[in-house]
Image 1 (tube, rainbow over the protein chains, first blue to last red):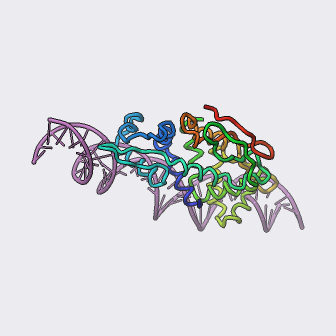
Image 2: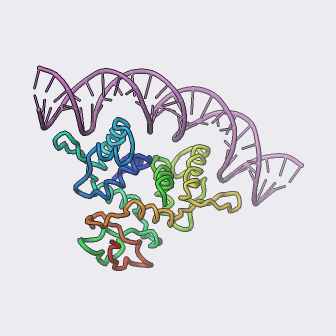
Length: 116
Length: 116
DNA sequence: TCCATAGTTCCAGAACCATTGAACTATTAG
DNA sequence: CTAATAGTTCAATGGTTCTGGAACTATGGA
């Protein structure tokens, strides 16, 4: 991941509407949520929301899939993971307090050494 | 941490100059770096950089401490940790693939259960 | 005190972002 | 085909952000 790429993702999250959408999608999991439900849940006009969903999609942080009349949005979790790693790069060199290990496995986190 | 707070921190990172500063400060660790060194390292005019450092400071992502003629900037790692936790809240409910455990301890990461 | 160095603040212009009404496309039901 | 529902796109507006020159403050050395 490059700086400009990271800026795009961070920027897509650095806005109240989009961050709220992100959090709803975290909770929704792989089932996702359609634009209309997001619009109703947040009380934001659908055209405004559409603008922000496009922004999230452009940052490749969400996927959009048509399902009948609705369009389902889902988080791209891999993208988030890569961003976190990028932000914390080199954190173990003398700064273990900042190090973020790999995401945990199926049911619980596994022991892991800092990659130094 | 609240939405508006998270937006402030994310926004402070969502800009090329500031993200580069952040990464330099991650590497610099608790010794930090002074404004002048950051300016030289990134080739950015000191007034422009000062604007961005103020932004990072306002987001409480960096600390500023005067040392003689220089001002040393250091990352506030706790702030970053809280942000990550906020972003990943509720991720374990059926979505362990996204869960980010607590930061690792002194020299290596410790085993950890997902807080579900 | 005078000068150099280190940073910050102020300002103005250009670029960018968010919001909304109105018009548009796409899908499904009757 | 027509109507209803679900979303997107467009254009205009108002607001915010980024940048860099110039002027400013603060510290330390001669």
